[in-house]
Image (cartoon, rainbow, N blue to C red; front, side):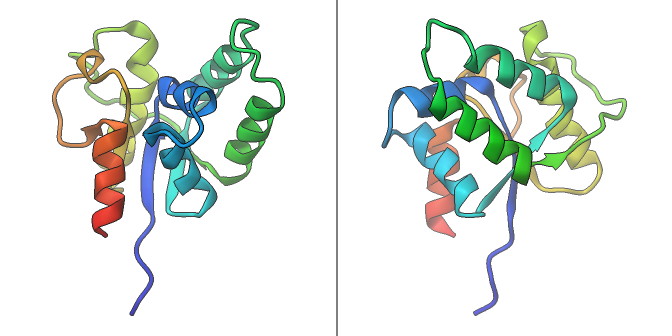
Length: 141
């Protein structure tokens, strides 16, 4: 049987936070899929900056866990330079970078998903999915 194709995903920061806060949770399993090579995260400079800023907040006290996750993402992520894409409908200005990254990847012919715990912050699209939906997709493959 041929190997399954890689899944490319822009992973919202809230998924990373949830994974670090709740080992064994659905978001944790999404991050575990990046370690197994099933999911390749897509990042941009703006996404990377948000990851670092949020995961280093003292209120979370992630320390080693966040550092390990960030180092992992630095090693395996696909880097994306944004193109001019339609970002209308993105409710939170902090989420524009995430939607623009997935839209850019899709404009380039990459079947990419945006995995987020805040579906309402993004315009409805079949490629904007919850962690549960992404995990169900992975398990059906």
